[in-house]
Image 1 (spheres, rainbow, N blue to C red):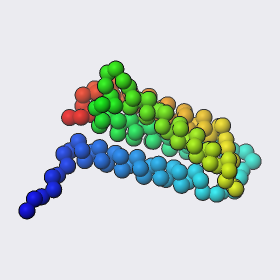
Image 2 (cartoon, rainbow, N blue to C red):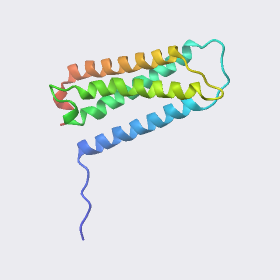
Image 3 (spheres, rainbow, N blue to C red):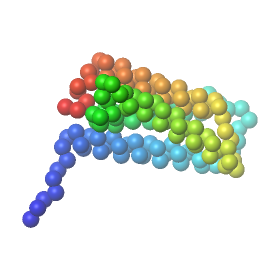
Image 4 (cartoon, one colour):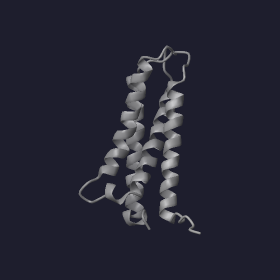
Length: 139
């Protein structure tokens, strides 16, 4: 009888990170597209929630990329670029969908909050990486 091989520690962490990312994307999309009562004046609280959500998205994506060595080669910083660009593209797509939703609207301020959250998330991860060392991610 042949047993299925167990995941290594690195594979298990990578799988967990990708699963967390999928949950974050699902929740962000759901709460962004659920119809709400439109507000005349958008609150700062809403922008902080968006910035926080996209901070988490970009940070999780950065750590997912850290477990993919071919994304983090010295000549190609695809992981950093992807960690910043994907959340912004995702947020922009959601904002476009909201423009066509009955009780939602497109907002450049929310798109800016999404981009700021993603930028802070990637910057925070780069800071952590500089303190911990890039070689620690795959050990």
